[in-house]
Length: 130
Image (cartoon, rainbow, N blue to C red; front, side, top):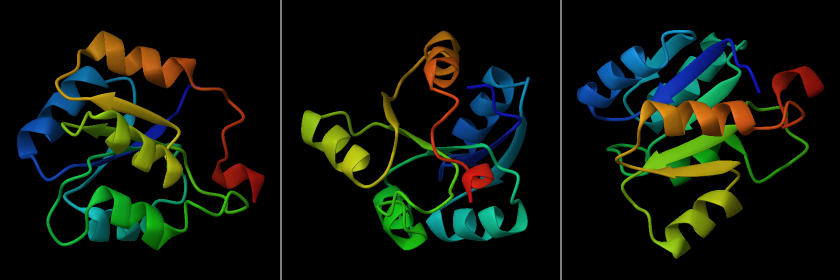
């Protein structure tokens, strides 16, 4: 997958700065929690990928996935990669069952992140399928 615009959802300003450095080749849209992320998806209908933290105030990552309807595979939504400190097997499983297509455990390297993004198939559901 070669996304053009990526929505970064994390409550850490440091993480947003890290993404800016690691993902210079993409246009980044930023949100501090799931509520902001849902608004950003409405405002930016050309987002190709979402990088989503789990633990955030107001609306966490799993709640965001539920709120947006990611369990409904017929919905045309950008794919989600969960990026979280929660790395137990059951956390990964919960994220994938909630609609994410991949899971990366913090801390991670830019090589690891870009590899996961580039290895994603181009046919993961997206807004173009609508």
